[in-house]
Image (cartoon, rainbow, N blue to C red; front, top):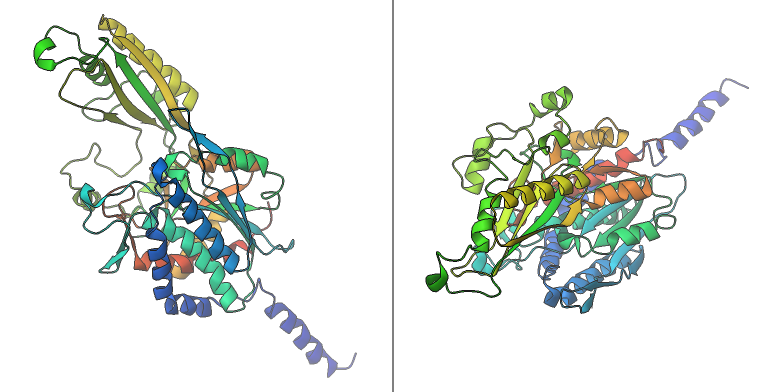
Length: 480
């Protein structure tokens, strides 16, 4: 080997390393592309929000399916391998059936040398009407001071679109995706994801066979600082039904003589929770895993402002005076001004294991009701049992998430548990065995499920950049 040959060979080696897609990341170029296309992104969100895809209203089922078709068309136009998967029918209380919205799956890239991520999201929404207290038409995306108001804007249409825009940006600039990307988008999440569990099981060895990680962005930040979510609450949804007289009775004529089902129901519900928020069902608190010292320390750094939180929701006092997660329950009694022969209340108990909650709640309510010595009949049923989900914040997925947040926002993320329930996360974990991360872009004040839901333009656009950066970080991880 002569001396003058050495620099030439070195030049070849350096060139081959620097152009490898895992080493070259044109973040600035991709970020600028996103900035220059934000009006297009907002218009697409406007088109999606205009579809009243309320999955709780059977009469809106055609709109839910139209939303799924629009999602599939968008992904097909990008060159994805797209399928609309039939997941069967839903049986209604009257015995009739209605078709469930098809689930959209899509794939971009199939390089076996790359990581494969699967992004989950949904495009159905909660009910919304102007007369409910909205300041704007809920299905007409309205930009006010940088906030994009509309039903489904934050939950979950903008996050789904941000992931789609992420793939689009790489494609538009002819930059190779650093990982293979799959999508699974559903249209029944707000009413329990009917049919999705069975589909995941059915496609475990096909669609999910090459998936390394699953990403969910159906959640939100807890403060103005970006967050990574590592846990969600379980949810046990109960019906308590009290049956009395054989028919409804006039309250003026029969009031004071009949032991009303409503009175019984109020009596037993009053024994479930104290005025300070403590659940009184024996054994419930003991069934919840204690807070670790490590988590306690971690929560002290979360930039959650209690006073701002109270102001936003319009209350003067909360059940608790600190920002740490709590056990919880909430109640939804029906009401009217006459004596029902039959009275129903639904309530939820969060967090404890499902089987434990079922036994403890049922046994407790029956024992309390028996002490009333009422001639009425009590029936307690659990109609939903959603499992909690918990991840390891030390998993490389979360280290990659921290790096992506640092690149885009130049801060460390809050590590939080989500107050809501996302039961499909546990299904993904149990069925596929894949690791999961929840990466929200929704703001802490987005008003999910409430009036005036919004997604800020900032979160929508910067969230897209976060997803772009995250794919780059995931590409560096070793396969599980």
